Length: 313
Image 1 (cartoon, rainbow, N blue to C red):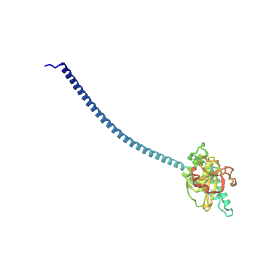
Image 2 (cartoon, one colour):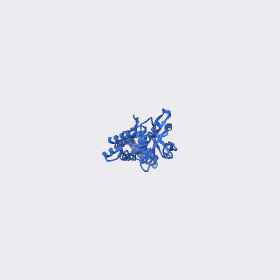
Image 3 (cartoon, rainbow, N blue to C red):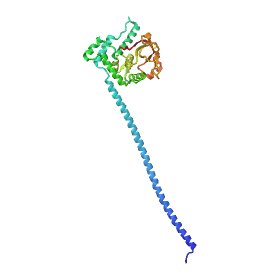
Image 4 (cartoon, rainbow, N blue to C red):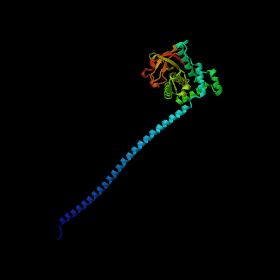
């Protein structure tokens, strides 16, 4: 028995359909397997990525911690280097003994014959002299000749040389403005010098204050005035009184400038009646940084009772 032509065509079509279906199923399963493999690879890669991200974040945290430690150690090293550099500035015992002899011979002592006015006037003048002394501008040979005989160097010149080193230590440049010089000097003083009361109201020479790293208000003022003068800013020592605090006395610095740029300040328009050069004199509290000169109106509470410019020779 033979198949009709139509049945043969139909059978052939069925066979073709079955073959194509089989091929399609095979391709489908093959692609499904490929998809599962790729998906698993993707999941594995994603997991690896997440693990690497965690490791990266941990490493970043470790890096940041190590960097902070490095910066802290670097700052500590810089501070140590600064301290070592500072340790080269202080005076020796012979200089200190000579300063003490100068103080015994020349610092004014209160006398009822003089009264407060002349005592304050003479004290301000003496303070300006010892500021000038450590700038190499003043010499008391009757006391200092022995120092020169032993060392071969005059005490004022030795102090001047150390003041020059101190300006380098503070990192003041000739290109700095007067305001910037004042800012750096006040930053130095408030960082390195500590306030400490004395017993006999002795005025320390600037190099003594540098050596002891402490002093009271007049010692701060003398040191500040010396440093201002060293960088070319005309200065004066001012003695003040606060009538609201049982006439408590205080010392601050006066600088002969027109302004402090963006910083606030208190000033006198003229102090010729106190013997100072004509023109504006700005008051500076040497125990405060330049940006704190007007805080709580501290300076305004004090009235000037005596002043003396640091001599130029």
